Image (cartoon, rainbow, N blue to C red):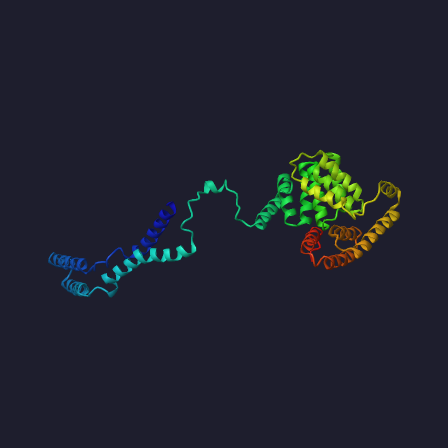
Length: 368
């Protein structure tokens, strides 16, 4: 209701602005007043001449001039009023102003405006989240604020997870590092930073990401995110038994309603299923004693055996995903894409397996 009252006031103001110049009739001619002045001047000249204040010649000349002006003033009174003062014209303009302006305003507002929208006072807007504003615009506002206030730790902690969800991992990494700098170190912040680093690497837990997860564990041994990704790092390195051991320990300590429990259960089933390239405990112990060259050779041997098995039986979706992930860990993206093509050809006739494969490849950043 307040909105319509405001519109009514605006319409009245617009109409008043149009009608104001038409408020007066034409100004009355001043010929009558001028004629009276000239007659008074003629009478004054007669008195001055009778009293001898001016000579007869000067009096006659003055009478001639004043008489000329008097005749001109009398003639001016007889001139008809100009056409612009036509009363009908003024009335037509007034009708258009009073009726036409509101009609025109409604004709424009109704299709373009929101007449059913309720009042929204400014005081309430200040306490209402701006949900309609695009997320990119909100991120830009926060970034502009942080550019002026780079030590605002709370701002960095708010911005970092949003950037990570948008897939802007490089900026998210910087934001998480600043959050740690200005808010202090914590297991949660270290785990979030490690996740962003892994996200930037296409889901691969790199050495830098693993280092952040290990720092998180040093601060809180029960941090769920850090433990999960350390298990994932072990899986990607081909140490499936170690990954399974990490995830089993997490599930043993977790409450039944832990939100991450299904994720860890799926991961455990993935590495504990048939055909998982797990190493025996003796092999793991031997691998730890090897130098980097020997360990790499062992891993490559495992990957080659997995690739050979999948060429014979290509129905193992989890096996294909492990093979692609292994190639990514080794830095061989060409072989990873080659395995991707072979995997899709192998399960092309099974819609469900193809869907599972595509979902897993998307998580690895290889959805093309």
